[in-house]
Length: 128
Image 1 (cartoon, helix red, strand yellow):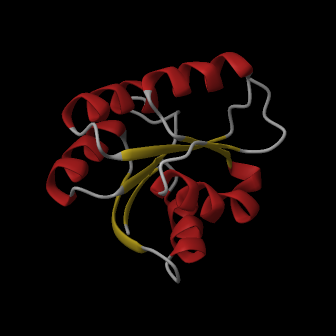
Image 2 (cartoon, rainbow, N blue to C red):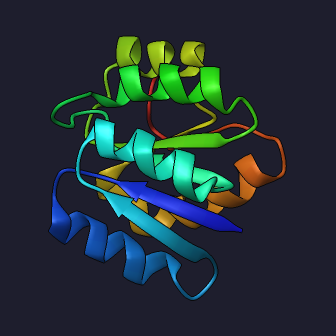
Image 3 (cartoon, helix red, strand yellow):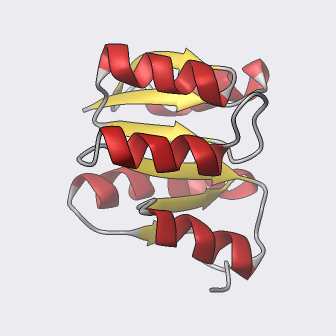
């Protein structure tokens, strides 16, 4: 499966790439929401991992546009936001996975596998 990564912190992108590259093909990275949309159009990944807090276009708006243009693309938010209202809004947009950054090492591969199988995934301990 192909994965596109989006986060405004290049160090985080590097950590996630190292975590995933043995099991998945990372096809690209983006540092803001607008670059994410352009990369998704060009690369057509199976899964997009995106932060919510990104410059130019935040993850929520990027996800709305992605779901409109590419409804089959599965989106997972990888974020620090644990507030129930934020999680609920993400799921309402159609985001299939919600992983807290501090839990990425434990949860991210399971989240990707779940969404690839058509299931949703929310990091354990996150309240809805």
